[in-house]
Length: 88
Length: 225
Ligand SMILES: [Zn+2]
Image 1 (cartoon, rainbow over the protein chains, first blue to last red):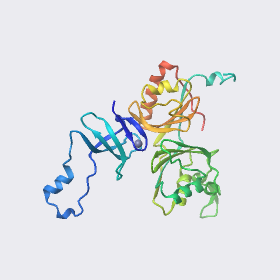
Image 2: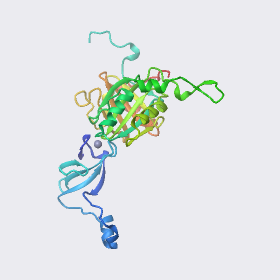
Image 3: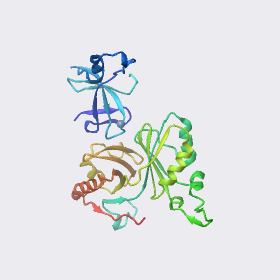
Image 4: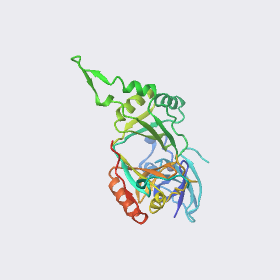
């Protein structure tokens, strides 16, 4: 069983969480300046790195907050968890 | 133990519904000290800021509550005094507050206190950014009590509910047999309250009966409201 450390609730089993993909995606400052390809890249394209990546999770069955997890996708080891907008 | 212990009726592990309680969801910015103070003044209650904890139950006797509960009569257009059900003071009301998230709490009180609590809180928090929502009847409370309570819950809950990790006053939103519940440790008997959405309540109760069958779980009758 994978345990995920919610920054508020502490470690809980992964069944309480949902995955939200790549973290730290910035909304383009001037969306009108983007062509379709750049807008599609912002909307849909997510990295899925082999190794350590920063990704979003939400504590669905708990406090219902989104937060950021640093996880090694090869070993499933979780290195960090932090609240949204705050880098550890 | 030396004391004569509970009566025969209290022995063993029991499951009972606490129906029709008032459930109010409160959201505000925990960094807004004025908002926390407004709630403290309005309800005589310090919201628990520590994750997964509850504020110990408090009698609803603050001046704002007494003012909102009275006068028990209102005057209609014809000058006739009529009592208004929404203004009736809930009998012996006690308020229980549960941490749900960094900016969200659940308030539980006796049946019939929802209108009054919402009015008092909205008045106290106006015009701050806050939300007060009466969720009564959206969820019910199942009370599991007795020496086997932890063993019953362990069949379907991954949390450590032992007295060291989850003492009285602790609460947690989690999964019980895949259903979302708010588990609260009430006392050391131990007693747990399981706050569960009404659509999940029949399932949760049926699952508890099944899990409890190996532990002598008995169903108790809700005390008359
Ligand atoms: Zn959480």
